[in-house]
Image (cartoon, rainbow, N blue to C red):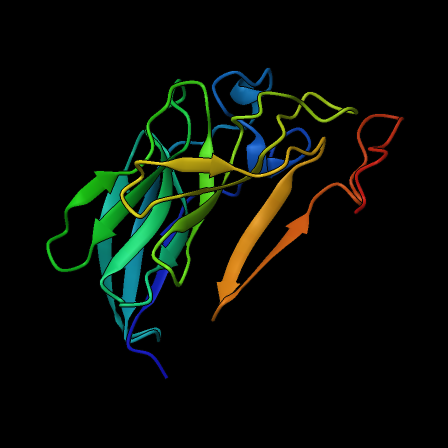
Amino acid sequence: DFGALVFTRRAPLGGSHYAYTEAVSWARDREWSFRPGASLCSLSPPRPDGELRVLVESPAGVVRDPDVHFDGRRILFSHKANAEDDFHLYECSLDTGEVTALTSDAGFADYEGVYLPDGSILFNSTRCVQTVPCWITPVSNLYAMDADGATSIGSRSTTCTTTSPRCWKTVVLCTLGGSTTTGGSSGCRGCSR
């Protein structure tokens, strides 16, 4: 039983091939799949007659990937402010409403962030700057950083996208994308791990 539900309101992520990394600044497909207008919201209690609270509004951008901190007082999320921007990680304080940018490096998309029990943050990023072998879609790999975003550490680089990191208790799980993904007539080979 919980008192509130956190979610994003936005257009579906989609486009030409693989939605997770489309519309980043250096991707050739960004104009195909960017659909602005999004918000980070909470619903309390989580039922049809609950109170809807807009925490972050982005009329020209996209908000995605909310993750509530273990203390229930902060929310980590990804935000792309406009079509020329990249996704960056932000944190919203539920006590003050203050939003703090944790990443801001131009040319890299940082998204799907999750809080880890030790206080650090695990996230996906296109910092490896490559595309999948079978399509124009950028690859993302897992990275970790301190809670304040000061230090980031990369994971091993793969040729396919690592997606959807999740943290339950002290176990971090992720799925490797691409095992069933096809692109054009060739398919994405060498991605199933």
